Length: 564
Image 1 (cartoon, one colour):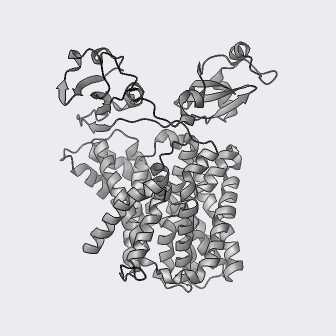
Image 2 (cartoon, rainbow, N blue to C red):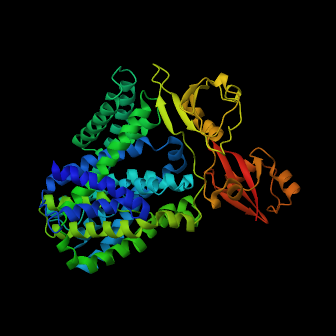
Image 3 (spheres, rainbow, N blue to C red):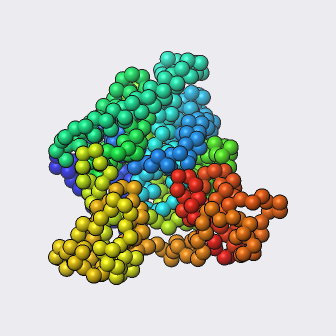
């Protein structure tokens, strides 16, 4: 208890240092585990691979479930096929390229090389989702959605390949048989079906129960792990099932939704800390220098050869802009999954099992240090940032039976808030929205008794979830870096998507392609961006740029006109 509590507390306190210094926090967790281990000052001897595997698997399931709940359906629609191709074919291509180098470098057989490639072949949802969130980045929706979907759904492919190759090696085979395809179909079909059915049942059950508020998040966690375990017992992919279940829950009207999300945010943090600390304890640092040279070379191959080739090949049919492809290739972060998969050969007693584990661990360290440290700077260099979205200070579920989308929102007004100096009782609010109260100088005031809102006021609003974005724009002042200020990013002119492109071109002197038919701005940009436009997409037309400013239901609603 003393050691465990001290390590978790140290990991949490280390997050302050990591955020200030820009150090990837997951690397700090691993480092703390190594320092507490047998070669560090902590001196804790831990070599229980089964316990490490169990803890890592449960933690990863919780992280995937939380990531699924926070992935929005509209983002998945934009990048469904690119994400799935990367999550399947991308892992296979990466594993194959890594295998070719491993056969040459370590004198492995092809199945052993493919096993190593499969272990390190998937990006890690925990690492990707955490580092993107903690860096404060607001990425172009298409890029962020691809990274989220790929990292959340490619673990099943890596697990499947690792298990299949392990079974083949233990059976003394030198090649894979055709039944592998049947096992692949079984794993993914059962996992997907289990996630869809299980997620729908979870929503149905939670919405019909009357429980103490604190029990809803606990029930959601228990049911999610039940879906994971059931899918695995039936021969499917538990990782895929729990991710899909979270995806379904996060995109349905759900009783106590904000409480569930808030608690799972803490659970996901605890899972991250515990998982990386345990994996740091499991490794023996004194064994790493002996393989450092070869492991660094494998890391270089993975980061600069295998990952880019896999991304460029998979995204070729979808015609992603080159900047987005480069960034997706770069943010192929490796995290806990390769280390957990590296435990599989140890559990199976395979020859060279320790070598597989140490190489996987070393590759994760290099990935977190090299790629993790540059997530934000690479996005700025490739111009993939967009102005960040805003959010209320707090959101509280009202839990009205049958109307679970109603929330109580709190906004703290600053000196530049758009709502300043307005009468709180006469604000142009959406339907079914009401200002409940204003707290001023520690006193609770009725909105109808105040003549205008002031800086420092705390305003509480009852609203439907679908109106939160509108209210954010009303009460929260834009707080973007200088380069992302709206007029600099989108331009000073706002154009309606339904405006005729020819009319705009004549008025502003735009250079359009010859013989262009009469189309609206929205239709023209939809064709240019292959019906997948996102905020921040831009098209140069002579001395100006058209910048996608607002998208609703996958249609361009507004565009900015920026003079270059």
